[in-house]
Image (cartoon, rainbow, N blue to C red; front, side, top):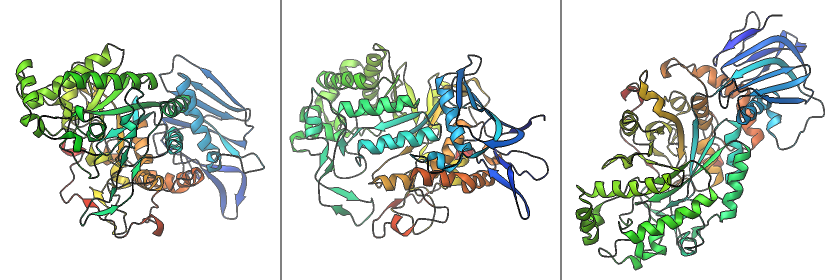
Length: 542
């Protein structure tokens, strides 16, 4: 029988087959009023799915091989009476093919141990697939609220199940330092702990009056990196400079602007937002952070190292005789130029060691370092400017893919923050804005990333709720070659979620937001949020 082909997220089958990437008739039996069907519900939607018309019990035999004619991360999965064959463009492609095979075997394939006594019935299909973007990322902020090592390794598994391949860890901020640096032990002895924590972000302020903190040893992080590497996921560390650094200054006061304030009086910050206490632009600070990064590079083999660069308030630099003398010495125009000089120093320092610097789009201010890449979060503007200037860009605009933002207008939503980002909003996110689409600059958009900051997200359950199911929609945007946002079939995506993928998340133990709103135990009555009461700009306006 000739193979029937399915292209894109909506699979077109004749007669009694309503295939949605895909829904196939079950040849093993008939219901009273028609054929039994198997809903594959593949997510992310594959490039092409072919069904030759057969079914049978899965033998459990999986054969793999590499085919250099396929692109990196691409694969071809064939399921037949003999088992399954996965042909990958590389080992990563084989691994992604295994994830698709798990989906074909049904939700129970996502449990930690088999529960069925009999083999599952599977359709005999061939899946051709490859990713749209090379960088398909998820950023998790563990500085504002610390999560144990086991939770991070669990998220590695969740990213792998959705074919996401970059795990960006935000490890340092004003409210906590989470990575062990052996030569500077006070970074974790002091900087990893704050005396109390603000609950929510609204008024009146509510405080949890007990210390919060924690950190990862270098061996903890080596374990996470190795575990992720086995799953073809790159862990990208972020060490935030020169702003968002009060935890480091509390540990080592000499890092701050000592000619402006008494930095010995600072403690790890307990407020949310942007601290005015930033690093001093001195040679001693450069040497200190070179030492930090030397140890970071020992642990993280990633090509890219994220150095933050966002929301650096310049008030202390304007008042600091030391900072002003450095501006004159370097012949800089202003404090933005001073930050650009500092970022450029670490861009060169990393390049000398075979690495590349990536930072938030504020690193554009004052001029972008030659080899730097940009993680664009303040809408699309910075990403467009960087791409047109020849720099690589990871698109992650807060108006589209900040998963700490509230999921609906429902009054039951826990600690509502930011703009409303519904599941459909995320599904219609487009990483390449209209101004770049169809131009040579579009190739500079090397990928996209969803970000989850944790000021109002204090536990694993809250992370799950904020991330899922929206991270599933994001994963399809990052992997699949979808139509333009307005042409995407969100109804089909919802059908696949309801028919198959929510059951997979249940098997994985994910405390996701249900389609009809939060469960009672997911709500946080009385904890104030901070919603944005202004219009949300989307890709159409870029």
